[in-house]
Length: 374
Image: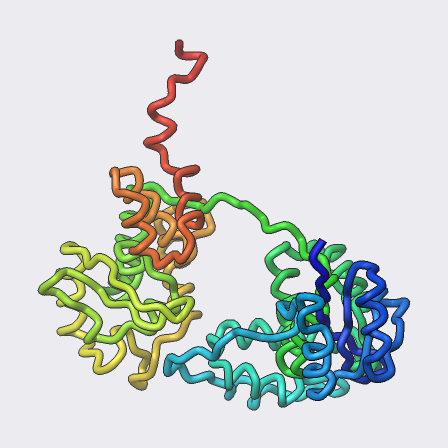
C-alpha cells in the first residue's frame, strides 16, 4: 500500500494545529517523531503539531519521496466571486440591539462581503450563526467543538427543522471556523442529514392562467406572467433590467444568476404585449420592476403579489414564485421539450437537478395503462 498522510485542521487548547492522519507504518512513525514537538490527541485520534508556515513546509520536506501528503482537507481552493454584486449590510447595522443578544462577529460579515456572497445567503448565514452562538451565549467560540455542534443540531432536529435548514446551519458554522478563522474543513467529522428528495409542486396550465387573471394591475400581471413564462427565480426577476429584454430575438438575458452565471431564457409573445402596456404606463428607468422611489422592487412585494392572486383564483396550493418556475419547466417537458434545453433555460448546472421534473410531468403517466382499466 502506498504510504500517505492526510493533513487536518485541529484546534487544541485554543491553538491552531496540524493533524497528521495515517495508517500505522514504522517509517512514517519514525519521521513523525523528528517533527517539532509532535503530540497525540485522544479526542481526534491522531498526531498533531503546531500550525505554522514553517511546520507545513517541514511536513512536505520530511516526507518527500516517502509518503504522499493529502492536503485536500487542509488547503482551500475556492475562488472569490468575480461579479459586481454589492452585499447590502444596512439591514444588519440598522437592527435593534436586544439586551444580552450575541451579534455576529464583524469579521464574519467582512468575509461574507469580501467573498461577494448573495444577499439572501448572507442573511441566512448570519441568522443561522447568530442562533448558534446565542445557544452558547456564555462560551468562548474557540472552546466549542464537534460535540457542542452535534448537541445544537440535535436540538434543531427535535424542533422539527428541515434537513435543508440543518445543512444550512452547518454551512454557516463551518464558514466561521473554516473560512473566517482560516481553518478549512476543521469540522470534517460533523454528520450531515440526507438531502430531502421532495417532488416540486406544480400548477396546471389552467391554474397558472387563472392566477395571472386575478392580479390587480398590469404591473402585477407582468410580474406573475414573467415568473412563469421565463422560469425565473424571484431574485432573477428583481435583478432584471430594461436592457435585458431582447424583443427582436424574443429572448431575456439573465445576468449574475445563481452560481454567478449568465444565461438566456424565453420571451413570451403573449407576455410581450402586456409588457409594452406596462412600460408605457409605469416607465421603468433601470430595473424592469422598480419601487416607488425608482429603486429595486422588493422580494416581499413579489411574494405578496403571487400569493394574493393565487388566493383570489381559488387555487388551494401554497403558490410561490418558485412554484411558477417549477410549472414552467414541467409544462415544457410535457410539451416535448428536450431536458437539455430545459436545463439551459433554468440555469441548472447539474442535469440531475432538471431530471426531477420527469417525476411530475403528466405525459409520462398518461402513457401508462392503469391495471384497473385493462
